[in-house]
Image 1 (cartoon, rainbow, N blue to C red):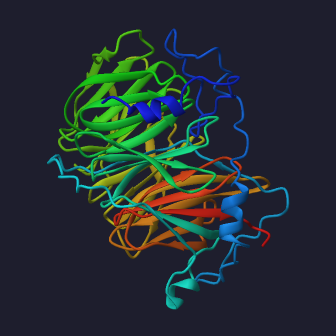
Image 2: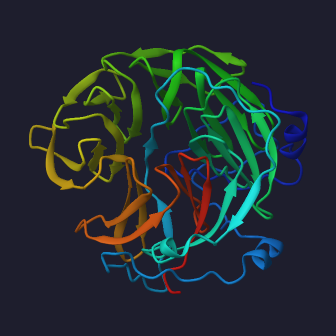
Length: 420
């Protein structure tokens, strides 16, 4: 899907190249030849902290500390704490019918911290305080992207659009029609990759280069990338694999991984394995060298909605109201080490490291308006984040804010402020 001329002008190659950064902490993916825009650093380079502009800071005013959540347990990071995302992949919408996008586009609204009084008590926690809400999408947000070295934020929705937000002003500066609902979105360095029906659209935010990866027969619901391979889970239960980079504008998949009976809505990747979670209640483990399934995990009793690699462990959540921690047995197969129960089904898992402390696990609850923040070693609650409806998308900018997207189409911005 072509990028509008106004967006192409904004992401042109002006000025010196900036350091590349991947929020998934994965090895660098070489860029397509001719797509570097005058060069570019390694994918392992750190991204400079994302800062709010002076105008936005004046509008926001001093952030207010949110009282502890109902559990009364909160993290107490020290001054050296910093936030960094754990490798993960999230699922998107699984229905394949296209939606009608309302016209004309509503004027985007930036809403600041003015929730109803009954919600202010628990609007933040675990070291996060609420900054503002970005409104404009009319349906669930299915992906959020913060490309390397960019001052733009990208959000995709099942309303069929990608919105481009200016990080300094908080204003929507472009709306791109995708021709169908956005099932998922990920970032890799300078690239934004968008899963839509029948293709993955890849945009280089520095050069304006576009790639269209063809092959899926339905909606692309999840994606993960490693080295030169991009994997995409689809609504028909298959996983498409493309080898990139390429000079071609349309690229066919090099392999198709079959085995799931229903939609693959979450993918996560380690050094040697690809993990896929599906609505068929199973997790499949794929060898990255042979692209063959080496194990099927069937311990969940309902749809597997998210899988997350954490060191040598695998975490998974399901609509069966559990989070499972998997470890390798002596035989080399994964087995359940621990099961954590919640009162709701779970939709999305996300991880964040803290310097000198155990990581935090974000658990988005299904048919609920909150994200539970858990200490990843003890599974004790350290905070709760609230929104209007179920939150399906979580994204963290290194050294900057946390973004959450919910089913009402609202994009919330949170600040990591453990010492407030």
